[in-house]
Length: 295
Length: 160
Image (cartoon, rainbow over all chains, first blue to last red; front, side, top):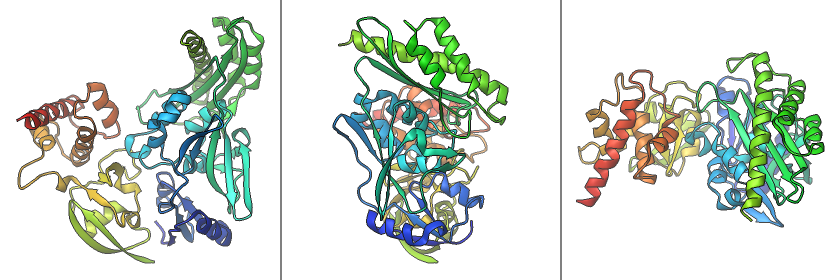
């Protein structure tokens, strides 16, 4: 690891000022589980490292106006165990619980993971299917970005060097909705997925037909991707038949552009994307129907 | 850039000067001489470098030493008490939970942390918690047996 200047601001304002003054010469570190590896491998060689460890605040997990707000410095473990998240968005808590190992989840943060923007991560896929928004804050002010517009390429986002991810806002699930994240792990339980798929569906209790549908995939492109054609297909159908789910999977395969690696060839990942979109739709649908039975 | 950090390791206070890029595992092993903690993969996957920092399991190979300033750390050296092995350590011996031993310090630290939080883990709880600690010798059955054995031994000690 190359030497660097190390700064530990106590407040968000101090951190933002440092980020503004140092610009691209500095890297910001929250949990550091990804960044330390990149530093070791000299993939990044910043003059200065700004650690957020001493910041107070920004780790809240709370519900306001029915929306779940995840503070950027909340750890994966905190999200996984949060009673608010588990009761309102169980699929999101499950997704964070599926990330890597307990050691990583104890340290890795919500905001740090988003800023890292590895397309193999799990939470961005679920957050995309839940229509979340990312808040970016700088000394000049603050803006919200739809998560669908946040990621731009491998390890690239719309975040500017002086902007800090400060929170993620996740809308409540509509009544009669079901949501799920499926992680395909053919190698080891702590691995990145070969394919990750999230689906959220809302089922009209009177007619039993689909009102809303969002499908997102990870590990199959340079960013997490949605599948608008398959969503339209499912929304336009009556009920989720096995044929419809399979057809949605086939449409999903078309928007994939995976790379071959140790977790599978491009062809294999594309095939599995279809399978897991079908399964995710079926499971989200079952959860939506079950939520009606429980009312 | 050098930093003076103060941390408590296994109940003992240390003050040590480290450069910004010093990793916690190197600080423990080379600055403090606590070589029980091992380095395996160096990327947070294998679990050999597992330590407890302020109550949470972490990979010391992914942690900058400066971030341990003001923290309390437990390494494998801190498990035995007054010359008597911790029940988890004793169980790994009794149940043959290791062969070459390089994964063992991380294994026993992780297992102790599990039993501190969940004194009666199911086999699935054990597998889920320990899945980030890799062993390349024994296979995992004896490790699970060791943790199960330690749990029942600790339960007996609590009762008596």
